[in-house]
Length: 239
Length: 163
Image 1: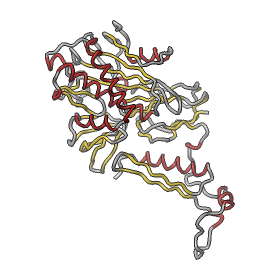
Image 2 (image 1 turned 90 degrees about the horizontal axis):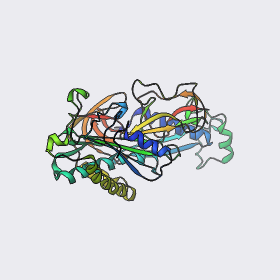
Image 3 (image 1 turned 30 degrees about the vertical axis):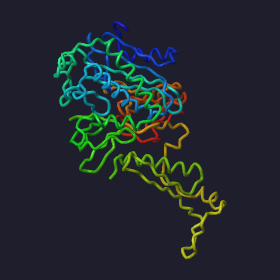
């Protein structure tokens, strides 16, 4: 475990660039430049979990991206295992894990392989084990941040958390590579937040509102909107 | 009702039209499934203008090979221009959202005229919260950027021309 690093995902990418070829986790006590989606800062004080898994997947990019769901399922499984509270955790498309409806964790994947070139996949995972950002610091309309400690009273160390998460991820990775996306999709839908309800999905250029119908076989979010059904491969979801 | 965007469909059809032209084909049909209950069926046909058959004649089951070759040159392309056929085209390996910079407000990975090395990230395609860094397939100069920041892209859509 690194005491401090700029970003576990940046460190993982550096390890891969230096020639690391087997899957590895990078765990850090704090991050000085933790990043979320589209460069948003991820507050990374001591006590929370910051780790990245780096691997060299062989599949084409659209398959590699489905590991988003493997990571979310592993994260939920680790949390349920550590807390014994299966009912309080839910999933928000594609890979947010919610605790009592609040944002407990974030997952961001970065891949460098495309167009026939093999590359690296880095799965960065942050979990608010002890502290959550001030709600005023997050975007208006976003899910309120929560911490595991404040919601459940349980104090779990980053090391103990990785001891639960790493084997959980390995199991879902094996399911994915052996059986494909279908079992991941089934399990994900069992724990989906707001299924059948109206949600908003903001894409790069527009926001669509509709009933959250399902996740399709490609992992896309399926909404029924006034204009019909739409499958959205990339978006930020709001409730 | 389409779950995928019209622009994406147009890009896909354009790519098919070019495939047709490049390979001297007269007809191409494709069915793509998007999930369990949505699909796109496209049939692209090139009119062999030189061999306009009399309407009264029964249509032949298959075009004789020489006709196909003869038809290739004068047949009007379905679309006036298709970057997907360009030898320097960088195409999208997946469906997603394209980003020209690492984050909003940051300088773009490349601009027109930029010299790139093989493997250098030229843009990002996001799907399922996975940021896919798209590498330059070869060293060269960025001649054209065919997508706008934040726009949806389809599989196979031309993204940039690098030569």
